[in-house]
Image (tube, rainbow, N blue to C red; front, side, top):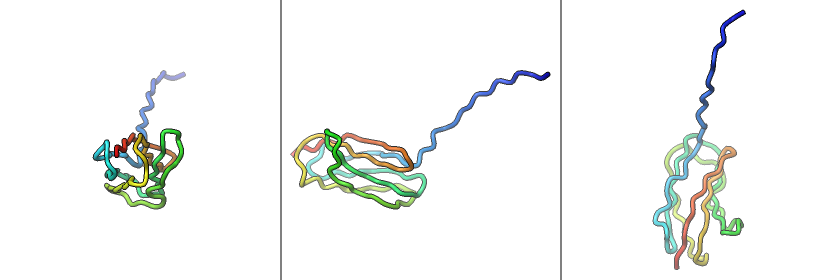
Length: 101
């Protein structure tokens, strides 16, 4: 026979990156996007409008582990709300950015 053993599975979410900060926000027309990569790999950093249309790809390709900063100059875009999205290893993180001219 045997004894009943209860088990609790506690699996931490494996995060390979974190979109940390957008500063300043609101901005006109330049802002800095800060992000951390915990595991080197292929990454995409892109900006979308409120309709979900991609307006610009800021980075697409391999990125090394560590803290990074990207300076985004949105001078060619009109005022409004945009979404900065980071895609890596099947995960996505998004931050809202407000461009005020």
